[in-house]
Length: 301
Image 1 (cartoon, rainbow, N blue to C red):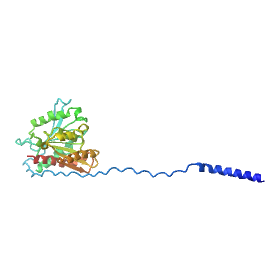
Image 2 (cartoon, one colour; image 1 turned 90 degrees about the vertical axis):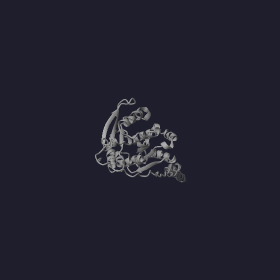
Image 3 (cartoon, rainbow, N blue to C red; image 1 turned 120 degrees about the horizontal axis):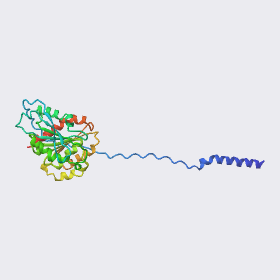
C-alpha cells in the first residue's frame, strides 16, 4: 500500500515538474526599453538683412504723349561661341522711336530652366515697365531677354561668351543705350539668377546691379563666389537684390549667399516672401523688381 502511494506521489511530482518546466526554464523577459527620442535639428535663428536702400529719388515727370505701350522686338545674332544664332527679345520703352534725343539704361533679364526668352514677358515685365514709366515712378529703360537653350554649367558651352562678346556690343551699337556699368543691370529668376550672379561678379566692370529672384547658384561657381568678392574693388562692387519664397527648395542655398554678403558688409536687399518656386510668385513681384533696378540707376551720379 505504501509502495503504491509512493509511486503515485513520484508520478504526480514528475507530471507537475513537466508542466512547470518550460515556464520555469524560460529566461525572464527583459522590459522593452523606451524608444530613444529622435535628435532635434539645431535651431536656426534667421534675421533678414535690412540693408538701407539708397534714398528714393524724386520721380521723373512722365513724357507727354508717351502713353502708348512699349514695343517688343524678337531678335537674333550669329555668335562664333554658339552653334545656332543667339535669340533674344528686346523691350523698348514708350516713345523710343520718337524720342531720338534720349539714351536709356539697360536691364538684362535671364529666364529659368526649360523656359525661353518670352518668359519675362509672360510674367508681365514689359507691361509693368509701361505702367511704372507712364506714372513717372521710374525712368524709361530697355530690357534685353536672351534665350539660353541649355541647362549646363557655364564653362561647358559658349553662352556666356556669346552674351559678353557679342550680345552686349550689339545692343549698345544698335540701340540708344547708356553704355556704362552704372546704367546696366543684370537679373534673372531661378537658373537665370545663376547667370546674373555669374556675369555680375565675373565682370563687375560691366554691371552695376545683380538681381537674383528665387536664387540658384551654378555648382561650378559655388567655389568662385568668395574669390570674386575678394578681388572686386569697393567702387565696383555691384548692388544686390535677393528674394525667395519661404517654400522654395533652394532657400538654404540662398541664405548661404545672403550670409556671405552680410558677413562682408556688402550692401544688399534680402526679401523672404510667401509663395513657391513658380511663375505665380515671380509675376506677383515683377513691379518690385523693376522699381529696385530703376532705383539703382537714379541713385548713380
